[in-house]
Image (cartoon, rainbow, N blue to C red; front, side, top):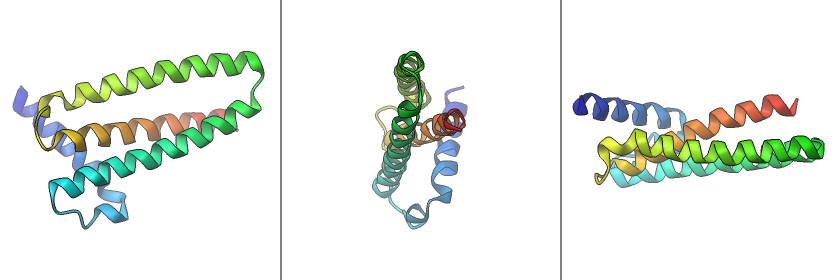
Length: 118
């Protein structure tokens, strides 16, 4: 079972950065870790911008509800991604798996916020 988890996490990592131009040339684990971290940072930046724009459009009661939902979602995302990477904790792949997961989950949340913004 543990081998299956590690294989699935490794596969997840390789899927995440495939579309990123800067990541195509990453050949070392350190470069791949940095690429995953950069992808997460960019997704988080876009999420924060969309969240700010959405909050400005909402009534106060909806702002409070969204603020609480966002806090809850961040706790979920962080816990979920740590769980996803638990099989490789302590290894060099850990940073890539965590940041790849954070990037993917953040992109999914970004899409949901964009829908709410319409």
